[in-house]
Image 1 (cartoon, helix red, strand yellow):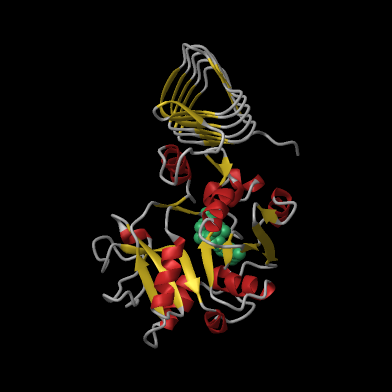
Image 2: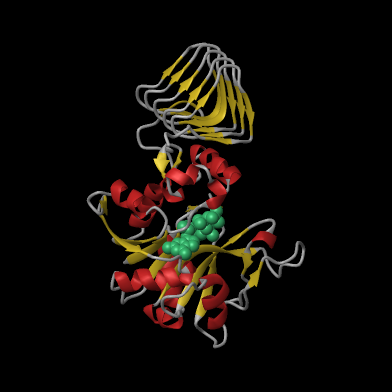
Length: 347
Ligand code: GTP
């Protein structure tokens, strides 16, 4: 089965991290997010993935130089202009010659959805399109999707005012589509599948269904959620170990090969210390993911944070709820809260 993954967005909410690296290639617990998504797809019988690209397409080609990821064949559809979610799906499907039912995933959704169950549900109902729905406590920031008892979609309610949503089930950004849906998408212009194509499919009955499946689900697209995704992955939300070569030395403490941790360091789970990183004497590292080749200096405190590869935290500094970008440095005794810090790059 083929799949289209939408990875063409600029990821503006994760700037400045996404100036250099597109959001899907940012790591979650020391593994690029897209690799996690591709592994999940391959485990559900997907054998070819079309990456729907626009922003920084060469970064993806460089990441997968053989156009493969394990047994998955990768293809690329690069838009000249952003085509929106539906326009991008049509363009990607045409570029790759997709002519049978296929899967579509947003490239920023981390989930434990059983993709095979979504495809089965779609086939059993002879649907034209099927949407995965998850339940959230506050649906007011999402596309809310009420359904009939057999799963047929009743309506789309985009970002309902707080307390007025008809249901707590929201569009989770994973779809199964028949190729006939592509004919409903105008070619070459910016079209949104959730705001235009799906609502228009409700003009007739029996075409659009949705599966309520309340599994782990997170859109990683904001700094808070990007950090939260690390803690969830370290806690086993999408399987264990959180990254292939990590060893759990105490409950919730994961260490990768070559990491050197001083005996006087205090680690509070969940914590991941990446390969060849050094954590100095008297340091305190809590609820944090540390990348490869990082340094946490003597007596530093790092809490609720994500350090990407090569980050350096100076002695006695205090870093809380931060994302420290690749090779970025926090000076000695620096105090930072709730920030994204990136290395200065040569002009
Ligand atoms: P923000 O700029 O922070 O909103 O992030 P984003 O650019 O990723 O946008 P958003 O989170 O709304 O997009 C959801 C998914 O669709 C992401 O995986 C994007 O990469 C992808 N996406 C959004 N718009 C387009 C588009 O025009 N073309 C393609 N190919 N993908 C898109």
